[in-house]
Image (cartoon, rainbow, N blue to C red; front, side, top):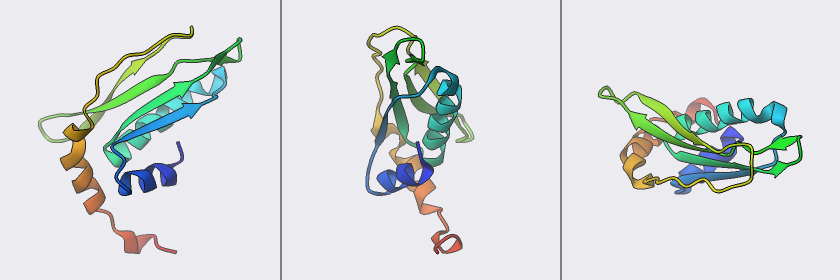
Amino acid sequence: VYPESARTLVLKGAELLLNPSRIRREGVEPWHVYLRARALENRVQVIGCNVVLGRAFNGRSIAVDLELDEFRVARTSEVEAGEEPGTLTVELDPKRLEQERRERLGNRNVGAYVL
């Protein structure tokens, strides 16, 4: 869920980001925030798969999609799995965000942050 990794993958053509993880119970909420942020920053759908292992690792995998309102303001919509082992089925269309992604990446000011 590192911003640089997500941006690099999207710049190289990724249309969907998958984040297999081992996040402890206490860190799941912040992890969900990071996944939403990567989706918004890059105009890409994100799937975070978390392990269910005893009491410490409680799953709660998530699929993050983006919805655009009439003013093209993006908001996230999520489907979250529970704390038991199982399967989460979602329908995503990465091509739906292609135009938004191209515009977002095209508006970068690379000269402002090149080292």
